[in-house]
Length: 232
Image (cartoon, rainbow, N blue to C red):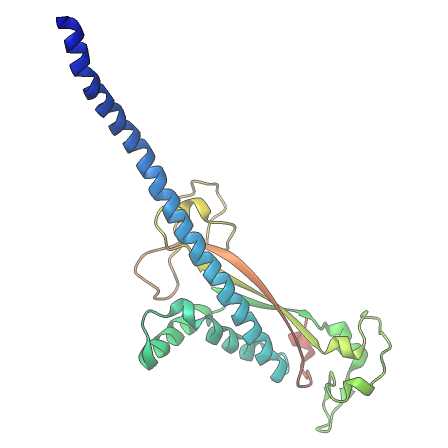
């Protein structure tokens, strides 16, 4: 009876010890999953913002003759929400400054024109009223629809399609080492690569890995394209 009583008294202690071990194992995993979900939400938000920003960039290109500088300004304006830390006019101005600093050097974001091409420009170029050659944009509904050697008619050549790649910083601790992908910012040396990426501009004092997020936008040109060297 005495030994049975001792075993009965020790059993709860063993159960409590087992519960503590299980708690120590499960809690870090649960917390990491919470951090992963939080980072995924931030990435989803960044993708939605980038989709809008890419459209803003394409619109600027449509009214500025596919000028890369104008498209970059539209992209910066569209990505401002990702850089905002406070509201009001002052917060908006600060967000614009951060976005311009990060994107303006052409490292955090890249704009590529997919269409039209140089060949389409050569096929359909016309001398404009200022005596310069350009891809015409006027009276498209009444122009010849024949396809040139570029595989486009003049109407299709006036559809501007761009691709925007934005390197988004993974700001959630620990998750960045797991979720980081193929990026110019990260040395491709495997899953446990210790290289860190210093953010080129002041989003914070810490270094972050970045992953590339892509977005496409298509709009119709509203102005002639004079410089064919802007095209692929």
